[in-house]
Amino acid sequence: MDSKYKLIIDTFGKDRFKRDELLSEHTALSAGGPAKLFFIAFSESELIKIVTMCRDLQLPFFLFGSGTKIMISDAGFNGLVIKNRTKEIETVSIKGKASRVGIGIEEALVEVSSGVSVARFAEFLNSHGLNWDEFKSLPGTVGGNLFLSKTLQTKIKSIKVLSLRSQTEEIPAGQLSLKKHIVLSAVFRIKAK
Image (cartoon, rainbow, N blue to C red):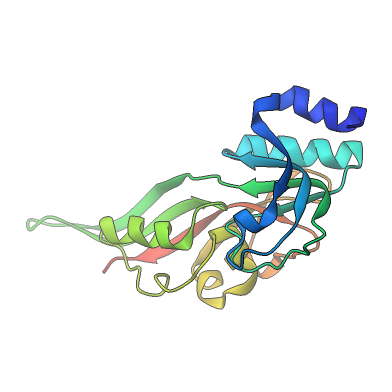
């Protein structure tokens, strides 16, 4: 393995990487040959750091979430494959009214990491008394679905992305571009049930 890959492995620790990992083990269609090197990112900071290193070192990389919307060749990928397993969900603000009867929540802003499955996001919303019906049937992760699902896009307040210059930026849903951005997280406006 060349020195560029060794630098990345040394940075994160060799126990975090797998060589010749079959990508068929990580896709919904069970298709895909081996990745030269395979890594799972569990936090936003890891995701930013490894993507930035790949760009700086000019190493080919491929990033995906749950693998429900991709098809990978049986020839595999001759570079670093990064599986996004970021998992943070946080209520960042609540809008409502307080009265003698109690507190009534009307709407919440919820920030969700791109690697969170839409099913897990829906469970979170349901458990917090927020409307989740529109999300429950979407497969895959929040990050991948933001590029494809108008349902998710209409609920967005802002999206945190990693730009081509490896800068973290907040953008509205209408500016999201598959060619320019890697989704890190999104803030959703969710109505109460």
